[in-house]
Image (cartoon, rainbow, N blue to C red; front, side, top):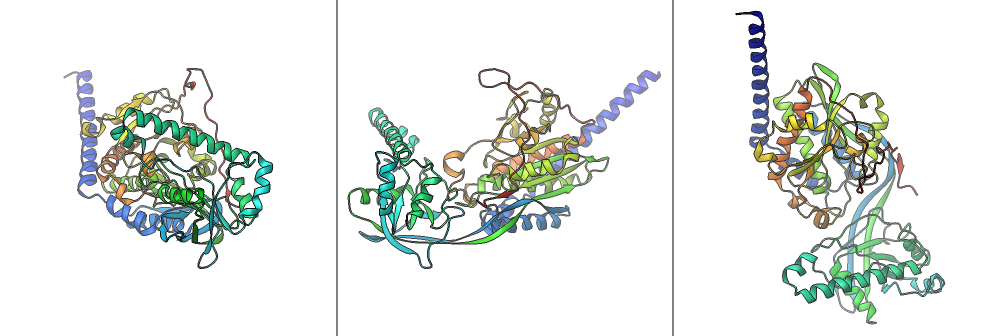
Length: 513
């Protein structure tokens, strides 16, 4: 047996042993994810137990503390790392009753950071923002709002989503309803513009004129779903009312029946509050100062409980950490997870981490982020990294085909410039990849709405995502060298060259104005 033959045989045996060891870990990942899943428990504790996680709220702090204690119970070191401060606010009850011309409890809630009603609420007539000739006419009308509630959102002419019309309507009725909707939206935008105020300034002008409160309705084009964002008022409550009840009040006011409501919206200002990211890690053995990162934002808007935005991303990354701790406790590289705060106000937590840890940026092998809903992961972009196909393709080849069969990839793709937290890292040159999910009507039904609750989670899909993500992290840890960071020149939709997105600083002190 000559030396070359012996060397080749030895190399073949070494590769075979390595592949066998990899397959054993991957099999263990699949077994742990399917037979010992903790996803339902995590979802219940976070979404039902803690509730919505608005930045600066007590629930946000409870969520951070729960994540730390959960990781520690799994033997994974974790900490809350401060990145800034935010206006503290705690949601109380919202109870809205129409008391004239007849009695009905209305479906609605105060917007985030809304001021309170007087204790027990305040009664008043509901009026519509009129159609003004110009801003002078608006100023003349303003004193008349004293002691009244003012409706400032466009009334919807139908509470049926487009897909419902497409299913049951005639071609003529579908065309008519869409034309009418376009007309009324354009007319309402002109009505708002005539006041001379933008959407943030108008409520302030109304409250300064003595209005009891502001009534809005931001329909999400789905049955029962309204988007719940933040109030701009400083002294009186701003509430969002369901399409159905907003339409009722609007029609009554428009026909001269002078509807009255009693609005009791309670909340509490809690002063300036520290804001955190929750960081947990499984220390690497061979290359502890190189990192493979998991990423998901922890905060949410608070109309629902933030189940698919981004509770599912959160429990996915927690489950992946739990699985890897159980079956791969001594990774080659350090596995780090970031649960970011205040993504919803501008990727603040992840931008804070990038800015606060410059020593780590060049040592991050890869980052995997998940945000947009509960569905199966079905798309991954190479984010503009020239050689992303080489390593991502190799890692993905280890994932069972029944999990990747719907997966579409785009290589090298373009760098993300906004939307979710991997962008903070891409801007710093990190190979950071968003794991895009099947929508499950995400943008209409759950994204920032009152319906984003535990019951919308599709646990089978999240379980599949846990297997895929855990295998990607494992393979990235085992990669012999750091992957290439060579970047392409990004192109816009017209195919024209543009520039790589630049790093942006977070808002370190928010909501104070």
